[in-house]
Image (cartoon, rainbow, N blue to C red; front, side, top):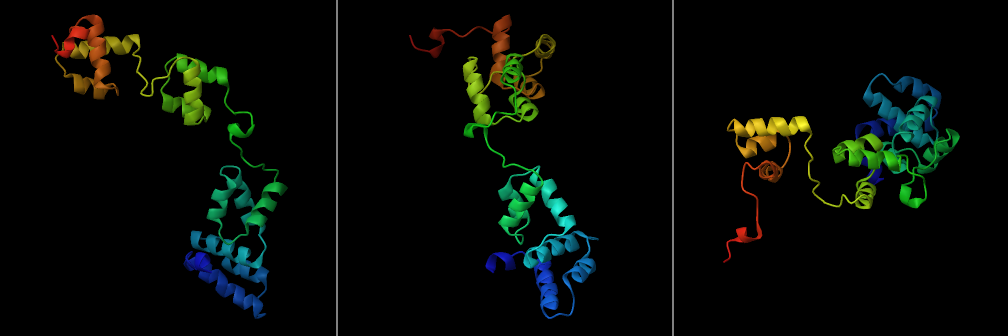
Length: 211
């Protein structure tokens, strides 16, 4: 009761319509027609009414099925708190929507291992790889370890054009921090590039200051 009451206006409205049905003053179909789906409030009220009646209209069933294809069941249940979980499972079964399982439970991953490794070797941004292949952080980390890319803070590899542009900016007197922000990298990578081309002295073991 507490959980349902916290839903607010739409649930209270649906409960009021349910009382009319129980009193015999309206039928369930008349209530659904009265509520309609003209506004978001009415749509939500209709969902709660169907849940309270233990039935789901074709409109709501279609809405639930569409969401089940995009979200996990527990997330859909949170969106439709008045619809019993058993009913949501029935909709999923009727629509042929299977439970989403993670690759660790034996399901074959949707992403191709060789394609992900190729993207890593081509120095794609990790965020782009995760977005493109829908791969989790932990799975991507394991693949990176397999190819020897085990640095938690992955080093940015500059293309030839980027190197030329960065060195031009530095020679023009632009500060290291500004150049790092411009090319979305850490300042240490800019310094490493400068050392590589001889713009600043290379680090040695004696640079620690000890005699």
